[in-house]
Length: 418
Image (cartoon, rainbow, N blue to C red):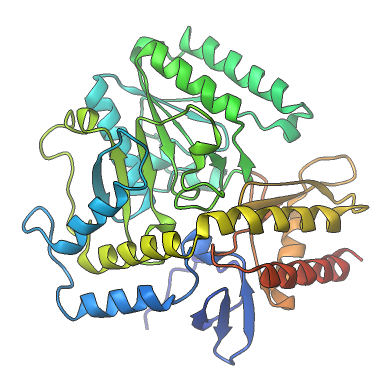
């Protein structure tokens, strides 16, 4: 008898039977408030009727039209629609299936476009589990352990994680940029660096918003040294941070390559990289492709997703409800020394748990996380030490549902911590 790999551990005990908006229902029809959104995937909520209708109609006409063999309308329409939301000048798109694949496609493009080898990533970043993307990832040892040697041509520089160092944001940014300059002058010569790759909010590494000054510093150095700037928007893209793209919180910063996935198609497998045509056309022939990339049903769902995001003003909703959620979580955290920091940008909220000495406390985070599920609130953990509980509601969440989540969170802390 076959079974799932024993390594596939669930973050919650829920066996989902159906989903509707911000709620999941288990096989006994118990309702759960889903503040995981499939790790930021179901941006329009579970089974948004417009997305469902688009996918159903597409299934009945064309399921798979392999895009290096034939072309199909859902893909062409999606490219046109994305052109309206991509930053000015970023006008060429390549589709694949997963975030990891898109990250690797961005690295391949950057190396071929510049003729350079080194990709500079930042401590705590998560870019995927495949061998190339995993080589760029330092959000936890589990991604890299036991599979070395890793892909070469990768260097790491500090990320400005102010809380962890006990610094102000300005001090953290100054330190990180100074260390980056030192590496560009020593271990990773600037003339050999093809790209910087950075998340606008550190995701698996702890839900730490990337300071605008740091992104601006990366952009300046990239321009000065002929380095490409890759924004890994897999988790931050499509409105989650309260702006359409997470990097837009840094005034004047436009990446050379954007990587997007997760919320792109409301749960259908689809990812993409986008770049100016002048960069994209430097990729070598045959370097972009794939059997399932740009699947017709996924593209139809993605087109409907974009229409919902724009038509229902979900980017602004993410900003407004995100501010409400962060403020509520901070209020609940008062007089709870186990919570060292609450931070967020849009609907990406991180709650960092620490022990009496201020050190990361993964055990308490795990206890609270499990207690939340028992209360009917689904959350996730993250951080290098697993000590950050994160809230990722879908972009359709209402003020009333935020209040419901906050009430469940307060009850969870009372039950788990006393």
